[in-house]
Amino acid sequence: MTRTSTLLGPAWRLALLGLAVLCLATPALAQEGSRFELYSWEGSRGDYRYVVLPEQTPTLTHAKVTAASHDVVGIVAELEKLPRGATLTWLTRKQLEARWGAAARPFGQALPRAQMRVRAACARTGVTLLGLGSRRSVIYFIGDGMGVSQVTLGRMGAAAAKQPYHLDRFKSLGLSSTRSASHPVTDSAAGATALAAGIKTYNKAIGVDTEKRPVRTILEAAHDAGYVTGLVTTTRITHATPACFVAKVDHRSKEKEIAQQMAAKGYPEVLIGGGARNFDDLLLQRFRGQGFEVITERQQLAAAKGGKIVALIAGSHVPYVVDEGPVLESLTAKAVELLSAQGPFFLMVEGGRVDHGGHQHDAVSVLTEQLDLDRAVGWALDRAQRDRDLLVVLTADHATGNLGITENAKFGEMLRAKASSTQLAKETKPKPGETAALAKAVKETHGFELSAEELAFVTKHPKDGYWAGTALGHVLSHRYGIEFYDADHQQQALTNTHGHDGGMVPVFAYGPGAETFQGIYENTEIPKKIAAILGLTGTQ
Image (tube, one colour):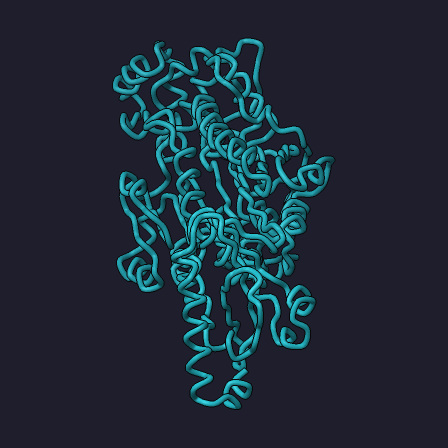
């Protein structure tokens, strides 16, 4: 390119530069319906250069295009000047050679990341982009602790509430086996590593294999391919499931280290969840230094306009729906709004507190968290019906609690409850012989009197800080006709996972390639199926 330019005299170079500038200025003045073409080629330094010209430019010379060329940032700025309603065609080298022969040979197609920037710029300005194959996006939902029984509980609860159950809209269904490399029952860390990286590993491992070696995840592969990426969760953002998509530590308890890795990484572009307690001012400043807007109050999230954000909307986990209201649909919608403005995206959304309700034997929380996840899935399915390039996948890392729905189940009464067992135990702090406050609170929020035997059961292990909430959930759920593991057995014997169970979990899919999720398979196959649909490489 440079050699061609230097062979021309100064006058010719000036004339060509003027023509090129005019060509670039023309789009801003053109009328709706105008047609333009985009060319790209590799520069002498290994970078890529771009130029946009009116359709069917009569002649093409290396000098003309070189004088008018832009890098990625510059061409995006020019594209945003195109009139709404215009059409832009990105010509391939073969198309250019067919029209201009040897003069077009130096020009080729740009890198995937540039393609996404161009696509996003056109989407923002209402310009129709032709000449690129479709780039699919995915919303990957994980219902933590959501086995078949939890889905059934949600479905029956929705029917009792006379509201739609959006999981019924999926037509492609499968089942996955969840065991880990170390145990027949997985914990969330090994389960999420399987769902993120397509490998089996040991319980408690975050993004590492059985030899504690880092593994590449589907989110990282998507980022490397030019996708914008995001994580949304109702747990701490450093908790097992979201952490497995971006962090590499040998034990899930190292949440401070996970936070440091997240702050150093520079992506995902959107991070929304709880866990503010794990991010000090230095880490937040590190995010800001990488171009992130840092949000620490949930009400600030609605005003976020674009670019990178990290929203830490709770000190620990986001409060249960039964305690403070629904949340996941709005978080999902905001994440998609922010990501889709930048190009095709990969988004993982975790309904994390279905699992917590199961651990606490709290059927009300399991039900309301599952319905909250269902509303978010419904929003995503509505969008996927409008966008044929959007894949929606929903699965679980494992089931929790050995939940059983008995013939005495009372869904209407569960839906009228006003507090989680965790919140009631936290507020009233029951102890042996000091249960009046708890009894009053249960009466006010659940509508019935606890017996002396039930109150004694809740306070039988006063030195176990985890016991009161679990025992209270167990008692309340029994009243509602929902059963779980024996609470003492869970606390004393099921200590590796604190109450997960090993049943298979459902897999739901809607959109391009959804049929590939049918059947029965290992959980490690799910990210591989998504990667194949998105055209990603490099996951296990």
